[in-house]
Image 1 (tube, protein in one colour):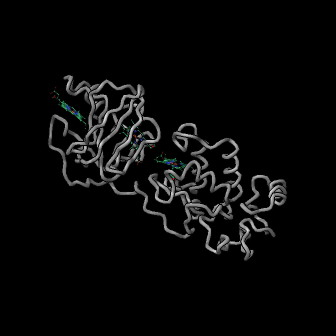
Image 2 (cartoon, protein in one colour):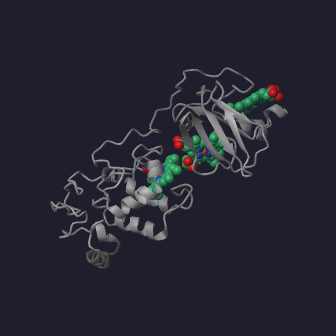
Image 3 (cartoon, helix red, strand yellow):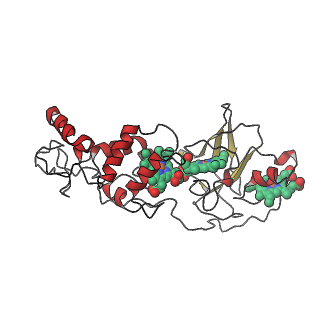
Length: 302
Ligand code: HEC
Ligand code: HEC
Ligand code: HEC
């Protein structure tokens, strides 16, 4: 789009509305100012940039821009989320979370969802951006000329493995045999058992925060997790505590902290942050082996 003359841009918009840069008709103009004329967005040919290099993703520029702005921080080239949503192939394959939909269709569902919206926190796409994305999806999700900006990924570049697509396994191969104490029952819902079920009434086991860090996404209860990270919790009064993960993989705090919490796990220069605020300090209540309440599984070491 960058070099499209303004008049043509305006008329393309006027005739095709949002579909301006991916309409399914042969066009005589070159959305990328590309001298070789290889520009029909739906020709299936690889769009080329000014230097003749293949352009990025195969996804129309306006759609790509929405994904770049709101999604690529987690669903980017090296995703922390379960799926890469960068290239045309990424978006047209079956969704990892709903086999009835393509990733593009499921992305639309999640963008419009009020119960589990994407992005789960932070700035959301505007109504007109969602409408533009929807127009593309319902219009058949056609290939188009991408912006040619970063990240440049060839459409056929294999997506990195989904970090959550791992089997149920106990990576440490060690089960905790501790009956009571900070190494007991790693992975289990410490606060629920201690507080709600009244299993431990001592002040030393009244926790405001408790959870377990694992090397992979799906690990059974009582399996020993992984030490080495620090869990950083900031409560709603802006009080921050740094919790050391112990040799069972568990971290706890008995500080008087007020939910909801902003949370991240840090290991050296690597971080994994929860994008939404955690409504409770009983981290393992959502971060179960399979994942509950939309959590993708265990809290993983970064
Ligand atoms: C801050 C990180 C983050 C951002 C930003 C983000 N996501 Fe997600 N997304 C996740 C995580 C983590 C999951 C897995 C948990 C879940 O399903 O809620 C996920 C899951 C999904 C899923 C279900 C898995 C799949 O691929 O079928 C879709 C679809 C999705 N996101 C689409 C989007 C779209 C579209 C945007 C941008 C509008 C977006 N996400 C922005 C972190 C993020
Ligand atoms: C099945 C219920 C249950 C679960 C789940 C559970 N605990 Fe316990 N915990 C207990 C009981 C019972 C005691 C002993 C209470 C007593 O001696 O009064 C205890 C004792 C403790 C103590 C020792 C307190 C003291 O000073 O004696 C710590 C620390 C502790 N638990 C941490 C945890 C952590 C961390 C988790 C989660 C990873 C957890 N527990 C999960 C039931 C549970
Ligand atoms: C009510 C359920 C719930 C609770 C309680 C909860 N989480 Fe989460 N957590 C989620 C969901 C859903 C996601 C994925 C979407 C997101 O990042 O917001 C997530 C994501 C995360 C991630 C990022 C995952 C990744 O692979 O990038 C981390 C780290 C995390 N949580 C840590 C924690 C910690 C630490 C606690 C306890 C203080 C906690 N969570 C409590 C639901 C929960």
